[in-house]
Length: 381
Ligand code: UDP
Image 1 (cartoon, helix red, strand yellow):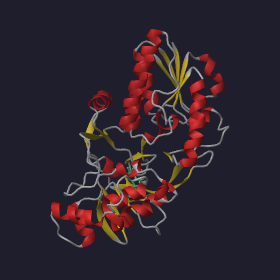
Image 2 (cartoon, protein in one colour; image 1 turned 90 degrees about the horizontal axis):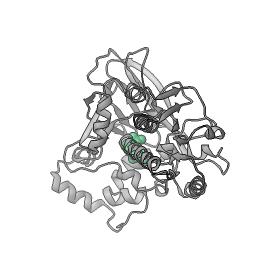
Image 3 (cartoon, rainbow, N blue to C red; image 1 turned 90 degrees about the vertical axis):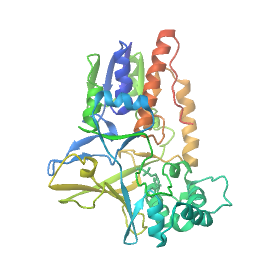
Image 4 (cartoon, rainbow, N blue to C red; image 1 turned 120 degrees about the vertical axis):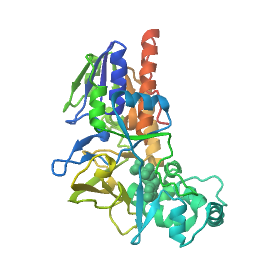
């Protein structure tokens, strides 16, 4: 079959590769001048450092199948993600662990003591947290919430944490030991040549035709037997019901010599600091040596037409609009919506790859059976 993948990010590359290997003719188009979507990495001309162009991307997963998949295309160097947080002029360990608790409360508690101490401060009346704030208060209590999460989250999401889903906070662990690894997954690493080189290799197959700087018009979908759309779900419909809300990021680049901050990511949760975090890219490649260093100050704001969408907001108003677009998508045929933008979900890279593999498998099964491929293999709601 002739299949089109719109978007050369992780979803498009993995689905495209799987279908090319199954004997389909695959075209991949992307409006940007590089593959990799928001995982794109490039070498900074001035410093030689490999930069995560759209912000930090750390590969971590418990899914052995996904790990096998990425390591087929790329060598992953061991990498342990370390984040610190500067609160009112002091630096603390992140994610919240025994070190953070002892630093913050000026104590020397052992694990069980700290657990009892935090439990006494946590708002235990909240048994089923309905939102981000309730989740935080019930987990760590007000002091830690206000110091580390409230300001950061308001800046990052542009709304009170009470309006956000609890799931956003559940991304972060709370530990009563000195483990400061940001993630808790079995497999973690950084692609030796960067994500863009890895994704370019996934796309490197004789049955895949790649066209960059090519914008696809949904009106041309009829030229293909099937289209996989990893652009914004509402974009497929020309945003005719209104726009689903996203946060976008602005990066302020600066360079220095040596080591600017001593870790890859320094968070700034204080409300009077306008940015959310500073990323120092050389720490993503600890196996490389560079005299100079390049950092990005990261600012979050509402995504306007023409901006790059990063984080789907998924507030109550968005959910109603989302339901409309999803219902419409499901009445159509010949297109499947995939990935972070196509399904309007906050997806980590490993989940994106897992879903792409499952989507390709579903397509092959439908093609064999002669049945119609659905609009969503992973519905947004
Ligand atoms: N968060 C926070 N303070 C921090 C780090 C994270 O309040 O120091 C909150 C914030 O709302 C953020 C969410 O936790 O959006 C998830 O954090 P994560 O580090 O997973 O965000 P990402 O790196 O995906 O932007």
